[in-house]
Image (tube, rainbow, N blue to C red; front, top):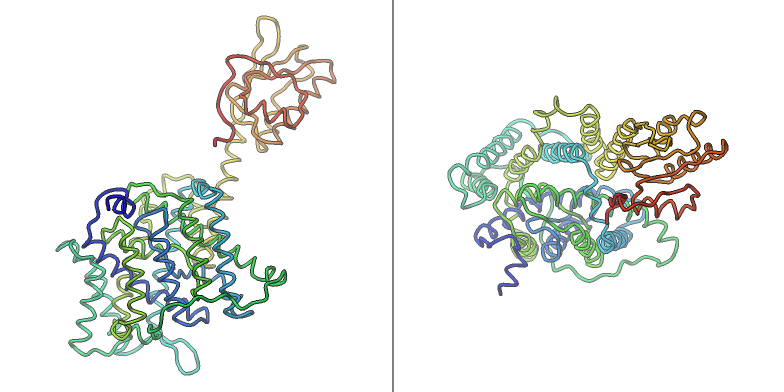
Length: 512
């Protein structure tokens, strides 16, 4: 029993009442989002609910981060809309399975650790962009579709009622924690808004107006598609994009929860859990998904710190599908909109405004660009990739300017160049400019104690320099190279003379 409890929450004891209420709240907030994105993609509403149930349950049990919530996220479904419209739902299920396999391999080969390469400005931009998307998706609930399929803003008393109920729900989320933290404020807001609408018989938009949530247990189903090379060429690009978006959002969410809870999750385990959940989705009629930032924040803010709330949330969705659909369909959309708007405001990194004058201009540009791509294109993978690439280029440029050499002459009359800063593709030009080949003596020593040879461009630069000295009948010798630097020079068949010493540094070029 103790082993089970440690598995459910390795970071401490479990508060069962908090986990139960947090799970119920999460389920309430997942349903409208899963339904909305399923309908947006042209799928059956149940496809979205099945995804919420299966993603939530599998990742809660197997994931690498207690407290994280996964479901039928819009970020991954949006990447598949073109596939669904061109080839149909069976190709969707096959793509979800393949994306799951790719995600599982990411975790199995321990590539999840590369989430550490995502800089803080990219995280700020990602979360700020996501906050805007969450908020604007709730604003869409203030619109109604007419008989011609055109969206219009709610007007008159209908619009005012929706706005008033939304503000009532949002205010409760803010105010209730000051009264009591025994019950999640989000759940109180949803129930209180429901009671107001029910007791005063207010006519307003409900969950049932989006779609019915009633159904049966998900059934095992092998995608009915031709299993050939042509099918693979169709689904693989979509699967790769979906896997990338899902993985990036999930691992960023994991990092966010790590920071909020001051605990450490397992990125590789989470990747394998996400992959397993998507494979199950594709074989049981779900639209697939990934970690859900908004619902995870709802869960963490409700006080959950274990796997239990995610399990309860997933099972609650299943119970709603099988039994409680008529009751859930009566919940006012305004109650859920108010809760999610508060979550969006909480997700936004307001601290980024306070520190903007203290940040380098390049970091400000990266954060704004990531947020803009996230908001405009809804493509989280592209936004993060662009942010990481620009940050890497800025880093490379800054380090390229830091290469310098201290020139001295030793007791034997040999010229010694002490190199400071890494030698890599960005700094090789500056490195070569430091040497005075024609004026140097017969033996020139390059001391790498404060530098290192990192890539092929660096090796090529050293070889070219040695050849310049050789053409003038002079010798170039490298001193204080680490074992890693010696190894890559040897592998490249470099003929440059290397001095062996007990004082050679022991740093690694690429830590394991």
